[in-house]
Image (cartoon, rainbow, N blue to C red; front, top):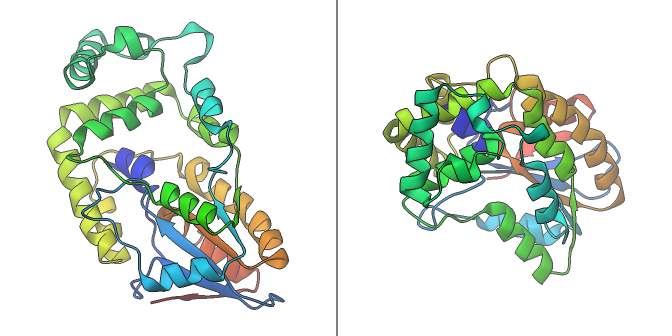
Length: 282
């Protein structure tokens, strides 16, 4: 399901120079005195599958500041997330689901988490998707974002965000809740397929095989057709000026969901159009 890719992999896209199997990219030229680096993450991964190359560690060490999608060391971040994940105007998930689908989801959450939709049904669909996906994993997952945050803290590097919590959480508000609820139901009905697909993508991620990831995504059954610009392209375009300003000030290490890197509207392509030299670091 592309639902999973959006939430977990952030829609891996088709990289420029996709034949080069790399998640780390060096950005230089166009007046920069020192290079900056851009890394494509997978937002959750089991500890047994986690990896970080020596090249990535070296690039991180060279940077003087770190940008993630969000400022992860903002002490108010979790409070802001909690405030933005509830449905507005007293709405509940039952307002967006057929009765049998509501029962299906409620029973599933009750079985896996001890709470049915009567307790958590006031949360927005994307928040429930994230919770649901955790039930499909066979591990306590790790997060590259949290690891990079800890690395920055240990190295006393400044941590910043490309967008605010309010903006990022609001992205999903632009997609009809009915559409999201439909995908949520699909995830439960085909949970075995969802879990297998994620396993396949993790294997490809570990191989840094972007072409293979693209093929898996293209064969997915569920998607956000018609909303790709909201989820990816518009955000990419908004990030580039922020990245430029950051890089002109200090050599910077950026880490974002890998799907933001690829395609003609991806960050790599947009940086190239601005005159930067962007090359894979193996």
